[in-house]
Image (cartoon, rainbow, N blue to C red; front, side, top):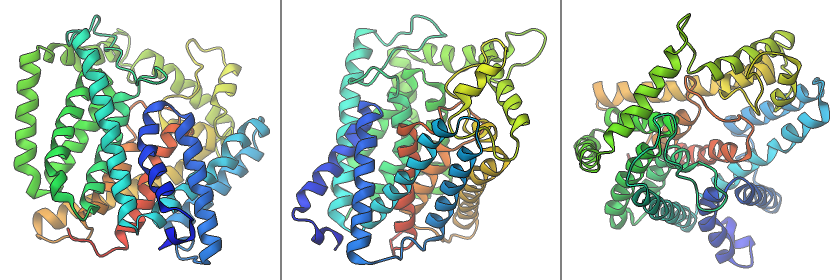
Length: 408
């Protein structure tokens, strides 16, 4: 019904369709589109005078978090630099509100689903060419095949696929004509996971394994299909001879990075550990409010530790401690604990009591957020535009599906 206030519904549906495709183009275009969507959400709220979504406890939670980020920036030594990150953070909350408002229209869901389908097909085709050219081989176990997105050369293929597959499944369940897409979604899932493993992106491989495990234990009806998926993937890896490359990258090189220092065990790697040490030093100086959002790259220069500087410490929880202090860390941790509670409760209800509290679509969106903020793994920058869009996209869908009477 919100689309009635626009002169052309087709414009909204077109930009909704291209939005997932823009995510494989790098951070700039999707950030612009997400900002525009956020402004559209404000326009809708003003025009319709509906405040229901603003009163949502989830939106209120993130609005409080946004205000706290601004406070942390104001207390920072690098006020204006940090404010450039914290003030625009509101656009992400508005983007989630837009997703919630538009989700009430089935054509929006169809456009978003088809947009993701198109983005996966583009990546699968582009990556297949690279894999054929490299003969499915990795030149060095420490260096994965350089499978990059076809627009700006960043290696985000595995990250994009592994982080969005649960959301893609959830969108599929929201479709009214879902059954005509049931074969393509499993084909895309098979090819996507295959590419994720060959990409050599270890975090993406971990996310995929975690997603498969959660699907297996939370969705009884899918267990046979998941079993077949694992068999087909295993056979494909054997036929292509790529299983050795996966083992080298995911297991052998990981073990090498952790244990290559004879004096002690490294946390992920020597490089990661040095960044964590720097984060700890920053945290000790600003343990309540932190050094300010996105200021690690500036503060790390104050320390003379070897390999101690980067744009972020490569773990969002450690970054939240150093840049937003204990309070910011508690915000992030509380989100993860709430998501964990939903998943654990649903696991118990579905497997032992044969009951469901959360519908399947909502559970998949929750799984998407749960995987994206998993704590014990190297990650990117907590305040990077691209990853923040991935973080906030499921929020609007979670609120919508939790408040809708959907079949499980």
